[in-house]
Amino acid sequence: MGVIFVCTAITGAYFNSSLSKNSSQISSLIDEVGSLSQSNFVLREQLTSQEAVLKSIEGDFSSLETALKSGNNDEIAGIFSGILSKLSTPSDAGKMTSDDVILSSVEDSTFDILLLGTNGAHTDTIVVASINVEKEKVTLFSIPRDLYINGRRINEYYYYYGVDQLERMVSSVTGLQIDKYAKVDLSGFEEIVDEIGGVDIYVDKALYDGYYPNGQGGYDPYSIEPGQYHMDGEEALRYARSRKSTTDFDRAGRQQKVLSALRTKVTQLDSIMEMKDLTEIFQTALSTTETDVDLLDAVSYYYDYRDFDLQTGFVLTSSNYLYSKINESGAYILLPRTNNFEEIQGVISDLVN
Image (cartoon, rainbow, N blue to C red):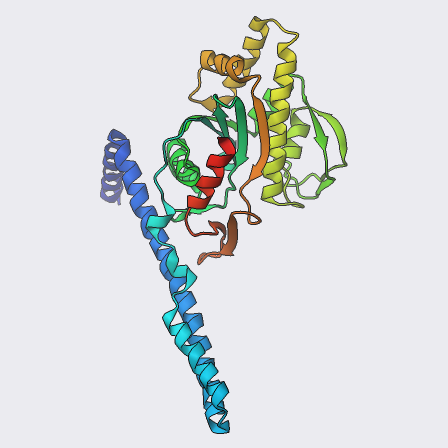
């Protein structure tokens, strides 16, 4: 047993060391495994579809036998034509291949920041802030965590491989090159909102969640009526995070509203505070955030882009460019309705440009 343990430890250490030496090899390995998973998924889709076609044809032959006995030539011709059509028409599932799912990101002229909200090792919030300097606008749009790409739901790339791999998948979906990222967990979000003195948010729809987690393994019901509110960090988090009585898509929209309110509040503070004091707020915010943006860059971005028009509200959903299904593992997933991401990339390009 001891020898096995030592051998396992040595093998694991060697494997980890080898992987850390070359990140491109990690990316290639992930893509290869993901492609195999995607191909497996596509094959299952094709087999399921073909099985349905064969069952349908089996029923047609039964009908054909009845028609032959009755001597109804028109009915016979119609059934026979239908059988030939089903045999010659490829199924929709066969259109999706692993090559279609991962598309190379195109060059873009925007500056794009990936914003992540996390709870431990999981991320449920994936937002892209795309900054177009020429048009002087910032566009926020959300990607649902259940979006299926390259054999996994997109939020699983963060859980298993980290931010770098999630950035690559977001680029494959959107066609945008992710330039920077910022990740904040639940407690960090509360602290940031409280540091700036809370945010003002207009709630347009009543919300009730009887299963809002209380952090102790239980639930605290949460509800809010339409109206104007000044929210502290805890309240803003509950408003942004609640989802049991709505959908992930609705939650994504509320999260964008909170981000917009954060920006508005910082702008208001800027008008009454010294630059030194505002910089201290940025420093505190960065201390609760994991990011590849340093303090000087954060302050610079703010002053460069603070007057840009902010556009919010766009969320990829099953009502626009995605459709939902239950995969072979019984998990809820979202897929692009065209079975690749070309349409979504075109829509996002128009949105940010």
